[in-house]
Length: 111
Image (cartoon, rainbow, N blue to C red; front, side):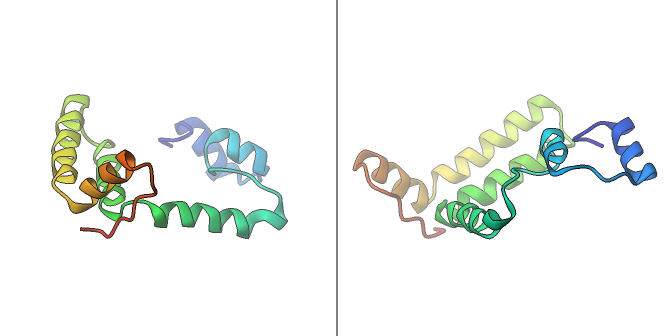
């Protein structure tokens, strides 16, 4: 319901009508629609991008996203500032900055 609205969610749940992959993508129910023969390779590419990211940064981002559902805007901004401070104190943050300056891929270790 948060994603598509209460009326559409109720209709989908109660009427049990199938929707196409294109409609699911349009509604934001799925991230991306790809041909069937590309599903595994696309999933692996997304997983590789996530795995290459900084684990602390990803974890803190997930916290911020989760917190945004039940807090007002100012509280969310304060919480995000707190999380940014936490992230800025990590070895991964220093590695990310160094990699940027040195124009190389970062090697995050979750520290």
